[in-house]
Length: 219
Image (tube, rainbow, N blue to C red; front, top):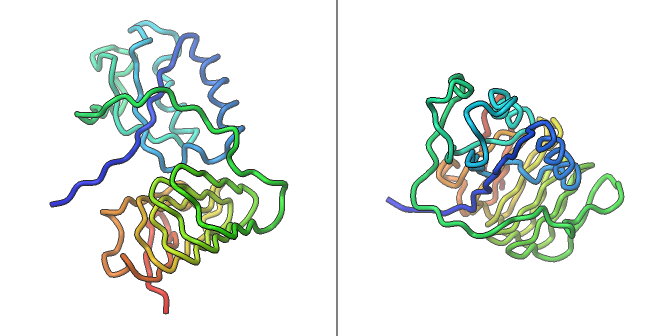
C-alpha cells in the first residue's frame, strides 16, 4: 500500500449563479487549460435550497471541463440537487488559502511549437494552447505543462503533463522518464496509480485511443 497527495482546488459559488459562472468563464479565458485534469471540491456553503439556477450548477461545471471530486457544504436532500452525482468530499483535507489563476503563466504569442530550454520547476505552469510544447529539461513534481498539441519532455516527467486541450485527441505525451503525478489528453486523464507499471521510470509515450489513455515504452 502506498499513498499520494494532490492539491485539490475548491470552488465556492455565490448567488446569482449566472454572474458567478460568467466570472469563472473570464478566469478560464485568462489561462486556458488551468482546470484540465485538476481535482476540484465544490463548496456549497454559500448556497441555499432555493438558490435560483442551482440544479444547473454541476452540469455547467462539467460543460467547462471541470471535474468535481467531491461536494461539501450543502445538503443532498435539497430537491434542486436530486439529479446530481453527489460525491462526498474526501476526509482529512486542510485549507491552504485562496488560489488565484497565475498572471505569469507562460502564454507567448502564437507559434507552432514552444521550446523551453530549461527544466520546469515545482510550482511553475506552462500553457501553450496553440501547438506542441518541447521541454529540453525535466518537469519537476508540482509543475505543470499544458499544450494544445503534444508535449515532448527530454528529461524526467515528475509533475503533470496535459496535452490536446481544446479537443485535439491526436495529441501525445513523450518523456524519457515517466514518473508523472498526472497525464491527460483531450480531457481524459490518469493519475500515477493508473499508469502502466512497465512504463514507469522508462522512456514512454501516452496516447488516447477512444476514451482510454494508452501507455507505450519508447526505445
